[in-house]
Image (cartoon, rainbow, N blue to C red; front, side):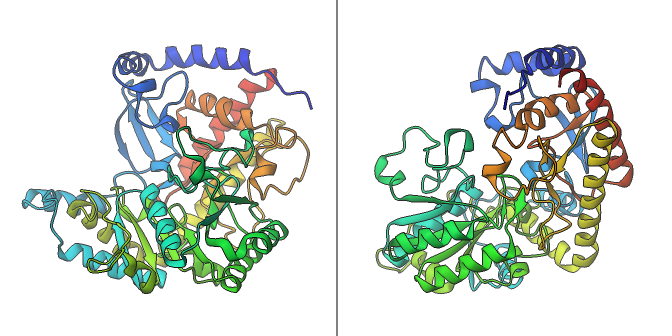
Length: 462
């Protein structure tokens, strides 16, 4: 199928955006003198330049040019309560005022209290904290290899587990799921990574038949992030648990994105499975840098102080940082106590968002769908990747389908839509990204109107 050339449209959008946000443009030019590509995380560096933010509250941002921007990026999909939730910021402000929060290097009560909540809400026996999702998945895979004394790691094609060297293969569909997605990795590492298919039980079964007795672990996102922001089917996750148990392989559930997003705890419980290890991050910190590995005590005991040949899981200088632990404990305690209200609101807002967006584009003559929109586990999924399928009613349940240019116009739902919506003061990533309890019905109406104006702008180029 012939691909559309969006070069003229992108040039028009870039010129309009430069006029729309001149202060952010000037700051970007300054940033290029000191920072690679103008920043410290490539996903944040929208082209031709990102908006430079001066404040954020709830669903809204304000940039250097004074624009109020409705945000659906929401901290890399880490926010559940929106930006700077007062329940967390008030606790931090009080602590800082009283001389507490930056005394790095000592255990304290908060770390114990946060660990207790996380264990109770996930069914884990033990937990160890670190500072990023990347570190949590790296430590989990390292522990699995040490515990099983096996070398191979099974992961999903299209799955992103941070810059963890044990999983940097088969991330990008455009390069092929057998490709290595990071320069500088030794072949002795990448050869130990086996890539299987998301929601593909037959392929998973074949991989276990071929490699099962050599696999240390299968690391799985129950809601895949970069691969489509869509849930795994119940059948797939339960098949993964059955196969890992049959072959004495550890099941690692990467819940960096899904943990505490669908309930006050692990989403694994909604699939009726118990993983051996779980990785948490994003939401559990309440906006602060907190991540964790939780799970079986006999596996996590590999990191114990007096363990011979232990796994060195120290997490870095800022692991268990007191201000971060305060934010984590405050956030988790809040959502546990208000679970029904918070997660009902998240689900209702997610459903309204999807209905509003697809209706807005349909009324302008554009067929749009959200990835994984017909799943039977998380119908109120508050993670959203908007797609423009080329034909009606594709399944949209695998990264291979979503990123196939013959199935979906991924350029339109990615770069084009992001810049066009930013001109309407709406910030999106991955076609939209995430909704929070801070997004109101009025905000969703604003989004719908922005989508209609965006559709009118791009239709002449289709």
